[in-house]
Figure 1 (cartoon, rainbow, N blue to C red):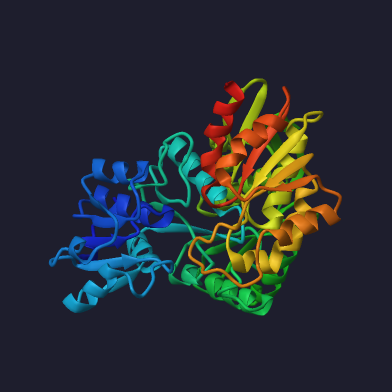
Figure 2: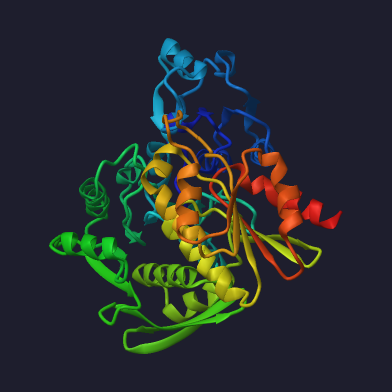
Amino acid sequence: MAPGIPAAMERPHFIGIGGAGMSGIAKILAQRGAKVAGSDAKESGTAEALRALGATVHIGHAAGHLADDATCVVVSSAIRADNPELLRAAELSIPVVHRSDALASLMQGLRAIAVAGTHGKTTTTSMLAVALSELGLDPSYAIGGDLAGPGTNATHGEGDIFVAEADESDRSFQKYDPEVAIVLNVELDHHANYASMDEIYESFETFAGKIVPGGTLVVSADQSGAVELTKRVRDLSSLNVVTYGESETADVRVHKITPRGLTSEVTVVLSGKFLTFAVSVPGRHYALNAVAALAAGVALGIPAHNLASALGKYTGVKRRLQLKGEAAGVQVIDSYAHHPTEMTADLEAMRGAAAGSRLLVVFQPHLFSRTQELGTEMGQALALADASVVLDIYPAREDPIPGITSTLITDAAKAAGADVTAVHDKAAVPEVIAGMAKPGDLVLTMGAGDVTDLGPQILDHLSS
């Protein structure tokens, strides 16, 4: 039986309640019986889903939205110090709680699995949530994206397992005390918060050190940053380390990955035995995510063959190579990839899934700081496409950096031999793509910002 509501969370107010991480915590609290309220910048399906659970959701930010009897105000690192609701909380002496602390409080008393890594967290967390649910274990989960099946990013379950996506971007994943932690990869990203790889490693070491005594770290045996992390934490006597991947040294070794159109089949060697199961999304990286999920579930004591079968029920997460539709013989697919490694993996996956088709990409860079540091690599990744359209940088939480524009990416792409076009007016993109696309082509909208909105618009233009 899951625990109740922490006293501080009985009447929480969320600033930015519609965000992926914030809304998940709010949903779980509402399902547990808390009186949830909050505000967001605009109306959304998420806001409506929260209202359906009994939450009060205001649109826009104003001091008057914060009730005097709120027990806490929940914020993420994206909330600015001058937010009127945050200022009002100070006036009323209402405690301010970071999103990560709120999530940590929900995990108390449960067997937690925390999924970390520079990329792949959402998919792997989702695979576990679906598989554990399929096995009747009724887990709670909090994910950074909506599952394609249940259509939600979080739920309160009556079982004793809590699966959570653990965000390294602001070091907030250091707040959790999981029984099992997964580290998929360790790379330099989030340049506003980390100045070097040494800082990244230190952050992940702290995360690994928070695993409960006798718990397990499941970590990639293939990715160089993860391998280095493994070396650094091997001496933690209270920690069991299980490696997975294609390396011959992996504890859970991938024997073969077989692409099958928009799905794949993976065979692993586990405890000396071969085990084969289906993965219902394309690409080697997603198959490896499934193996990480398998290893984590086994670490919790779940029989491997049961878990492998249940993992085949996973059908994807919105924005992770999600098919948006087809028109005029052209398929439009949406990708959340925004880091060069993710971009390359998704582009290679689509190449493998649709050999012989042209691949057209609409890419929107995410964050000025990321573009400043990785713009060249982003451009080089786009060389995997037959043609690309590059939009202006989506700022998200950042202010502009002088001289940093998407030109950094288009110049690098052209230098790599890519066919790339800069389009500064996002509204013009559907017509541009409709003019480029031919029957049989694949169109991939790619990025972590509002580029996802273009998929349906492109399909409309193709249909007209």
